[in-house]
Image 1 (cartoon, rainbow, N blue to C red):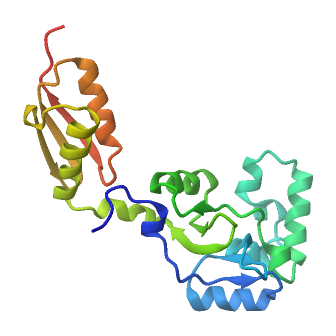
Image 2: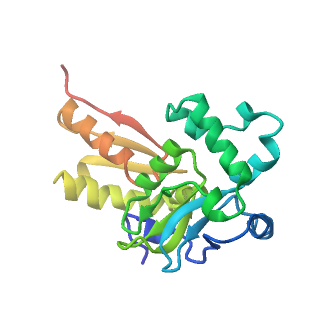
Length: 226
C-alpha cells in the first residue's frame, strides 16, 4: 500500500540520464535533444553528483555574442553578483567545451527521505525544473521533476478524507471524529461540526491544509459565541 506521507523516494524517477564531467559540448547537446529533458546531472567516476548542466548553459554559446546582458542567468542576478562577475561567468560558459566547464555547481539536490513539500519549495526558490536525488554519500539515486512533485494532487478524495479523520482528528488532536463532518471533492476539503473553540478550529484547519493532496479547505465550523 502506498504510504500516506509521501517522500521524495516515493515520487522520484530512478532511470536517470546523466553525463560525465568530461562529456563534450556536442555530446551533451545531442543527448538533451534525444531524451527531451532540460538538464542532466553531472557525475564523477564514483557516481557522485558534482553539478548540473542545462540547456540554458549550452545556449550561452549562441546567445552571448549577440547580447551579453540578456544571456546572464536570472539565478545569478538574484544572488546579487556584480555585472562584471556575471559577464565573466557567462563568457566562461560560452567558451566551455565539456560538462565540467558548463555545469552549475554545487548541484541543487534532495535526499530520498526529504518531504515532497521540501522538494517543491526548493524547486520554486531556485527556479529549477528537476532536482537530482542523492544518498548520504552524495551518489545519484534518482531525479525529481515538477510533474513528480505535483503528483501528490492525484490522491483519491476518499484517501485524503480517511487520513484527515484517522491521523489528524483522532490521532493528532485526540478528538472524536463523530464531532466533525469531513467531505472531500476534487481535493477541496469541507469541514463542519463544532470544534469547541475558535483556536482549536483554526489549528485543525491549518493542519488539514498541509495534508498531501489537499487543494483547499473550507471552514464550515460552528463556533461558540464570542
